[in-house]
Image (tube, rainbow, N blue to C red; front, side):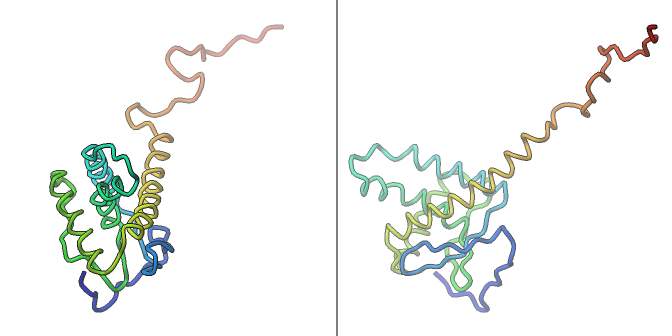
Length: 169
């Protein structure tokens, strides 16, 4: 990891979240990724999960999943004083590039004396941040149907019987 000089400014907006995760290294600031980056990160983590064989012990499974967890943590990382030396892949990078980057992130965290438990805690917090980003997108999609034309009010369509009716006495 490389020190940031000057330190990052942390905006006071909902996109930035301070979490008490990462063991003795806490607190950490995480930044919700853009929608496109969140999609790329979820795809890379899912690809890592599909490569992990069913481990019989939790410790072994977590060790195998460390790369996927590091991808998520690295994508949300916004530490005010430290940043990763490894360059994050672009949005459309192949999954293999994300896996290589995730391994580099794990290595840099280990160099800073982060443990597997610290990584799991940070992954949980980062997953929550990415999930909340995705939830906003899902809510907006559910509220808007961009595939159809303008909404019509009830009874105003071509099939409606909206002709004036004669008053009956």
